[in-house]
Length: 243
Image (cartoon, rainbow, N blue to C red; front, side):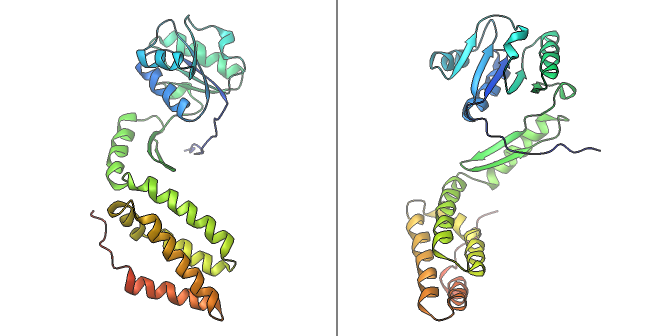
């Protein structure tokens, strides 16, 4: 059985077409707006939310039925009307142009599918059943919401900042690896949960101490590694996350 190729696409500034103006189309439009796409909506009628986006110039709305030329030059096309005939027509036109096309609730008329996604800042977890059951994908996403809480947004912002400091200030690969491994520890996730206002200072001071200790002693990699172990044994007896 073939497996789809999972990837993340940068849609910033890319022209994307959504055919349809109902609630389902609205959800597709929102994700495209969030991704930074230039969104074109074609539908005689639209929901109040899509109308708001059109008035806010977040989308371009054409208040009429779909026409073949609507898809010209589009990077990605979504057919989300309640008319199977229109959806199939959109699919056929997109296929002729070799475009990315998704027809909602019709896996056989798609060359890409849109997974259920859990987003926590820079963290995105995509769940796909390859169109077998979107409801199951959504159920799994809800289960993951408890395991990966809002603290992950702050946590990943801090990890990115500390990694950049490590890349500039630590030249030895083995020490970098040790520090990266420590940043991935559950203790920092717990710290973000229990002390979101103070965790930045806590993490920055920890990293500074680690780097300074390694620089002061001869054989900095050994010294840094030893301090890393001591901090692990003495200073970081934090409660484990519940669950």
